[in-house]
Amino acid sequence: KSNNTALTRTFTFSQTSCSSCNVFMIYRFLEYKAGHEKDIKQPTLQSFPQKVQVYSLHSPRHQAIAEAIVKDLIVGCSLLLSFVENGHFKHFIEIMDCKYTPVSRRTICEKWIPVLVKKVKETVLEKLATQSSVSLTTDLWSDRRLRSFLGVTAHVCCKKKGSYALESYLLDCMRFTGRHGWERIASAFEEITEEYGIRQKISYIITDNAANMKCSDDSESEEENLDDVGNHNLAVSIQHYQTLMTKTSRFTTLLHSSSQFKDKFEAMFDTSKTIPAANNTRWNSTFKQVQSLTALDHKALTEMCSKDYEDVTFSPCEWTQLKELCTVLAPFSVATDLAEGEKSVTISIVVPTVSDLNTHLLEMEETRMQCRPLVKALRQSLMKRFSGIFTKTNMKARDELKKLENTLKPSKSLTLTMHLSFGKKNRDRFPQLHKVALKVLTVPASSAPVERVFSRGGIIMRPHRARLGHKMLQSLMLLKCNQTLL
Image 1 (tube, rainbow, N blue to C red):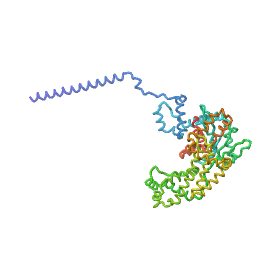
Image 2 (image 1 turned 90 degrees about the horizontal axis):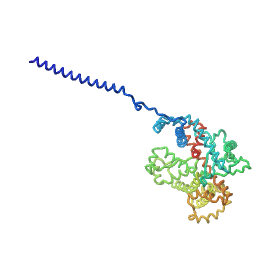
Image 3 (image 1 turned 180 degrees about the vertical axis):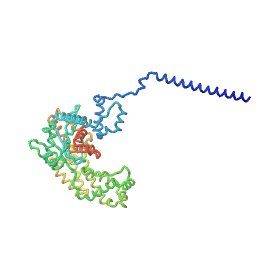
Image 4 (image 1 turned 60 degrees about the vertical axis):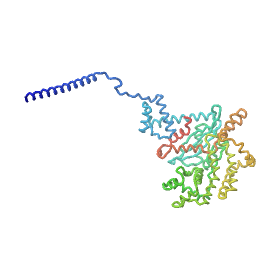
């Protein structure tokens, strides 16, 4: 019985093993069959990786993208020339349009920039060729590496769609080497005007008050009959307030350099409150500095500085002097902003502005006790610089007209456009007067246009771009200031 039981178990095990083996063999057969069928199947096109067909270097699409990069990013946004070779930019371009091959820095410097510069100069030449008179502003500027440049801007009145509009162009910002003598400045200036063929068309030249710029302008012969419009420089010597200004400057420096002082200042006032630093080349930056300081509460300011910062604490007398100084100089700041307008007629505001400043100083001389010496000095300077206005203008009649100011004073927007619109409406009625108006109204009241050129040059010549060559800087400034012509 035991033997029969053992045989039965052996037979059962053998059956189980055979079944498992059969199942395994069937599985391998099916696997082989499936693989064999897959191998003999013809592959489809989708199974192969697709190669992207890039734009040709001369295709319109490639040219349009490359031109937009140069115009909008390098010139418009003042980005680095090398950013086109940055890996992040290349990845961005690949995501935006994988068919475009990014332009190289070398191609931009050797091809695109010179082509655009040539295009801008040709456009300016065409526009100036249609003008009978041109007004110019000129000045010298030094970049971060102390390389000097002579900038010249042109100002004309162009007719567009039946109306007139003021237009300004940067003619050049050429490298100027050597001594800044008036003879060398005049020679470089003439070289620029000859390039554009406008020497005989120049009606007015606006410069700053530097002696070398004045002499270079006077070097023209009398036959040229070039009038020099003096640019009113409001930066007046105030040695009497030197100690007070030094303390104000020290307070501002401390605010921008000490984190502890900054924290105390924000805790006492507000995080949005600050005092701007003064700029040596802009007189009104000092005015805005004092104006921001006196806008604060004197008592709170004294409390903040009483313990650890007594050297920048202002006494009541000093505080009164600062507030009176702001009152005296506020109209001069407004006059400066008006005279530096970019899109409006500015020469027509000189006489009424000087007249208003004279009236203002007369009033201040009677009411401001602390600043009376400064007020007298300002008025004497005003009378000396603009003596022609006071001798040729009936100032008494102006006092009578002052009574009608509230009812007859036009809006600001009307004032900025009324000169050109009046000339348009009366062109046929007064043809000769119309020509004179187009000649005179294009004259800037200050040298601010060329100074704006230098401000843009400072943005281009940032600290990390100090190795930028002077020729490339000159080209980028020309394109930046003439973007509307691109």
